[in-house]
Length: 126
Ligand SMILES: [Zn+2]
Ligand SMILES: [Zn+2]
Ligand SMILES: [Zn+2]
Image (cartoon, rainbow, N blue to C red; front, side):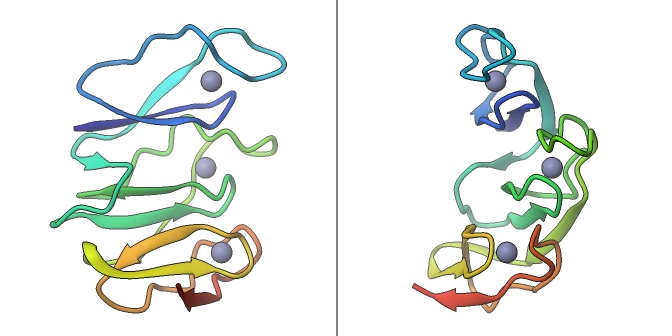
């Protein structure tokens, strides 16, 4: 599946084609503006995928390779800056949450500290 993100509201969607533009909850825009950030990926942990976080918008995506930089919803940056936080996403693995930015990842080992909007991720196991 492809993964799309709206640069106005930050919603992420897993879809085989570009999602409908209607119903964007952003205060300034009524239509989503979708960018495809991952060709083979998911919004959920799946075998064979890596996990990435963007240090500008704080989003986490599971993808087979580095996601595209387009469509960052951060107010200060238009391009994502992705860091690979987990080599092996594991749907049945341990769940970690960053104490600083709150993002949650399912990974087979302790995720990397790089790519946190608050400096560096500080993971604790849930
Ligand atoms: Zn939107
Ligand atoms: Zn971003
Ligand atoms: Zn973090």
